[in-house]
Length: 76
Image (cartoon, rainbow, N blue to C red; front, side, top):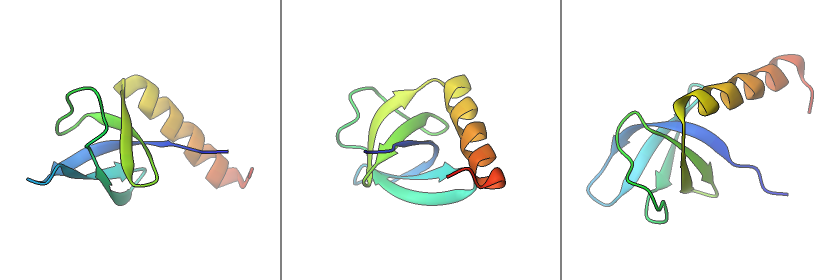
């Protein structure tokens, strides 16, 4: 099973790599395969070092809240 997490883009460099924030954790991801235009502040679903899909901010925040709930209650 693959799990992708939503992250908010906080920086983008000239090589099309972004730093994203996933609930306070920062990760670098490649933006090469996202089929939508993305920019600072946008949310993307990420897996294996790649942003794979742009997502709506409300949906991303909902999923991040669920992830936090899982971590806080150790339901994994």
